[in-house]
Length: 195
Image 1 (cartoon, helix red, strand yellow):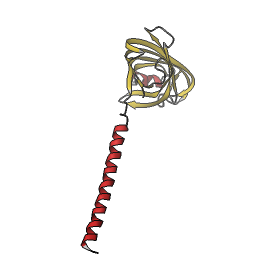
Image 2 (cartoon, rainbow, N blue to C red):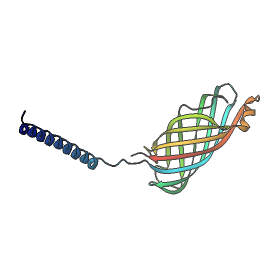
Image 3 (cartoon, one colour):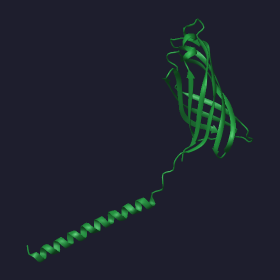
């Protein structure tokens, strides 16, 4: 092969490689320009509150069917529409024949209706539906519920509710003839809009 033919081949390959690199650079630039920025979740409301549970019959060490009545009072700060500012809420739920015991507390499913106060209009309630996971942390039972607001105010938003109940007083009650008939603790609820 002659030197002239070799240079021609080398120039052709160099131009082809440069054209390919330019094409990749252009495609990358278009992808960056055309890609919409990722939108973060927006915290719509954050609430703290107290929670009370009543168990009928009382919980024993071994799991058995009981009725569970929960009452919750929330104090909230709304960070976006429709609820900017402070407001309150109350709610809870009633479950029949759930299988609970002092050593195996936990909900597979969680449904809660909250009645908000300080608002007028039609969407002054929220129905929350989610799944609960129970753990024991440093002498307390911690129930973390994640799910969706299925209707009412904040409909379509995601929520996380974390309830902490100290076990110190309940441990002895579980061993008594009546069992643990009630417990109380604190709860934190965060409602987040998902883009």
